[in-house]
Amino acid sequence: MIQKVIKFNPIIKDKIWGGHKLQTLLGKELGNLPNGGESWELSAIEGNVSEITSGELKGTKLDQAILLYKGELVGNKVYNQFGTNFPLLIKFIDANDNLSIQVHPNDEMAQKRHNSFGKTEMWYVLHAEPGAKLISGFAKHTDASEYESLVASGEFVNVLGAHEVKRGDIFFMPAGRVHAIGKGVMVAEIQQTSDITYRVFDYNRRDAQGNTRQLHVAEAKEAIDFADLDSGLKPYTLKKNDRTDVVDCQYFHTGVVNVNGTAKRDYSAIDSFVVLMCVKGNANVEGTELRLGETAMIPASVQGISITATEDTELLEVWV
Image 1: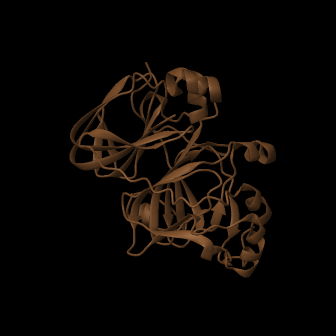
Image 2: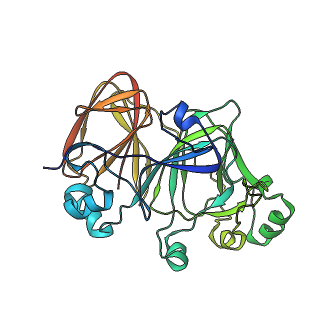
Image 3: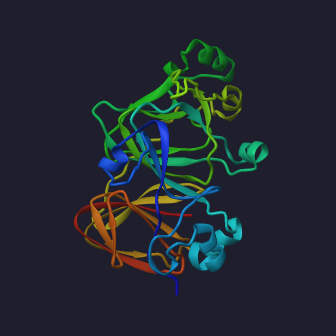
């Protein structure tokens, strides 16, 4: 029988816009990285495959574990569809500066151009400085014929929706929606397994060598949904010691489990692995501590778990 709770080594990514909150707020070890922008908690991206840190599978890579346990680990329906290609990429992101204005391709475009999955994603805001914002969707009707002139003049940002955010806000970002995480925001991100981003504007930033980052203006034009006026904000109300559904799409189903005491979770009907991300407080999951900023996987063969907490705690609970 595979272990009930599996934890992984985070993979820290240095980003030009990153900072130090992954360490100061979430306890991640940044080492010598000057700008810790992302912590890849659970990844099967080539060259960045997560390694298990707990139990009898310690030291095993995620793809190797899937090959070994197949549907017992990820679920029979998931294994039949994806094989050893784990379908989600799970991250924490610290925006110490504005991220580029960007868009991600859908499955069809990503398959055609990159032989990859598309990139639909969602964000849970863990921390936001006063007045911090996210960009999501368009603020007014815009069409493709205006796009290139707006980008060339630097006015593209003026037609986008800017939304002030606070801790606990959740945004859904389907492929095709223009977006950007703003300075002073930290998020938990759940997305399809893809690392394809088309940058439209990057604030003319230069790296330590004086180089600007590549833009993808033409590719973005093809990917953008110009009719998208939706902010993507998902309102919700927490239920004590229970799950509140927040995002339900073809790629993942995410809820927020609020625990102060004991929450019993029944997974017998879903035929999928479950990912738990601790975004507030500290929990004990079947005897394994899950602290703020930590992530764990529950294998598909586990029919249910018990989560306990002695303080107000929130976990993102995700399956496919």
